[in-house]
Image (cartoon, rainbow, N blue to C red; front, side, top):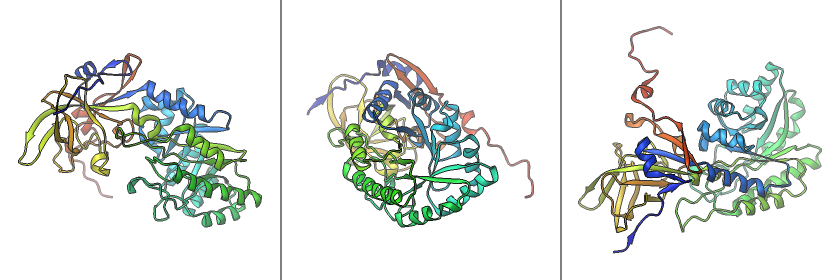
Length: 420
């Protein structure tokens, strides 16, 4: 049988075995150098344009990650008051924050207006009227873009596709026409932007091309009617490599070239909302083997990480490459790789070939810098994992491992009864 030894004993110059021994597992590890490289690749491709990159906070809201974004001139794309709070705590100025999402409450709109966020990406007529109402009450002027739903198939997983007519996001171009036709009635909303985001983990250029062509045609139509469009937000969605040899991500330069071509002649500002592209491949989840269990039909490799730590495999049937952290060459063995949570869905991989493992072995689950810790829960009363950033041979804990006391903070017996 073939043998394989993993060469990956370090990340960004830090020994992963030593890190796991010191901080325990499961443990999220993010490479600052890898994040910087992704930021730089996008900024380089955008050189010479009037642009702003706004990191999609939902991908990884850790304040250490957000502070790194701020350090390199990246703003924030937020979808909640909590993400707004995190972005501001990380130092990101309000003028580099855009507020997206279909369910913004009036309280959230007011919070964002009070600090002067750059722009609201408006997703429904009801939201537009709410924004007008809240802004008027505050004596503020809200800058807004209409989120266009271009009815384009992003060719990605159905649960992360957002640009089809049946999806909950955005409005049709026909509805948006009516918004602009009546925008003079919006005394406290400056509607002068367009926004489109068709989904996540997109690995082909054609869906972007289709969406941008439709947005560009609408922008030109509006310009011809005298409606000034000062910004076009092209969203995010650039995919990353979850499976070596299978996933082939789009090059940032090719993507930006497509945007430039589709929006040729646009003199306003371009906004970009990458999330997973900037952080996904920068992260790994370190986990130890608890035991091997031999079933009648399968061999189960039971890890100390579980679906509460990384939900993507159970939620989307998502593939993540899994590998031992450097060790001796061993024969390849087929495992169902599972966690200890009491759900059959707590499965990271089925019939996955790995070098033979033993209890205590350290493994890494790759490409977990996005939608890993951000989607974690305390299901089965499992405290949240620690998160650490590594950078050229050094490390810093950016989230302490949650204690049992932290996990139940805010809970109490029902002793103080009241009537509503």
